Image 1 (cartoon, rainbow, N blue to C red):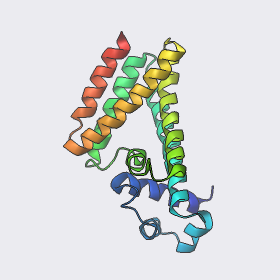
Image 2: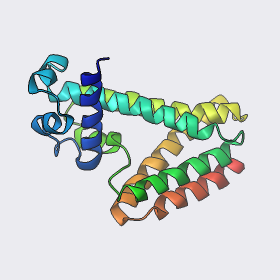
Image 3: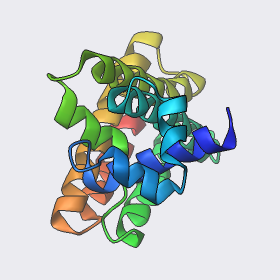
Image 4: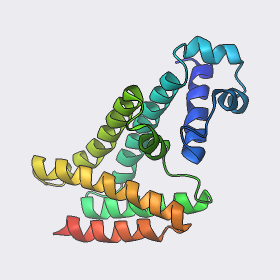
Length: 186
């Protein structure tokens, strides 16, 4: 991937994380990325849906990698996931409640209006679920339980991010971390 193309995608992720799909325009992406407008149309000839779909998938891959790296610090899944979610809470707070994930905002805004973006969001969420599932499998959970819990953990963390940003407090995510640890220790 060219540096310009990658920079445009990262800028799109950053903007959509802060202000969502509808709040982010192509002209703003061009301005914030510093890329010539022609580059945007060269790399993304199908427009905003294409750039958003690719940005969401890139964000999903990067987030799944962060999850995998974050969970590698402990062989105990309950502790690893607890500690990871606490780190997410700290990150959301330190960003002034602007951070979390562009995936959350974009998925909510486009679930029924763009099949292309919705497919990218689903693929990205599957990557997150799989990162949690793999850690659970490594810790001895059955395949079915690990898959179900991977979905549950992803939903709990995403909901915790929304509440933390809304309440301007990392405490909803800290509550998620606390109860995930209890659930996964059983």
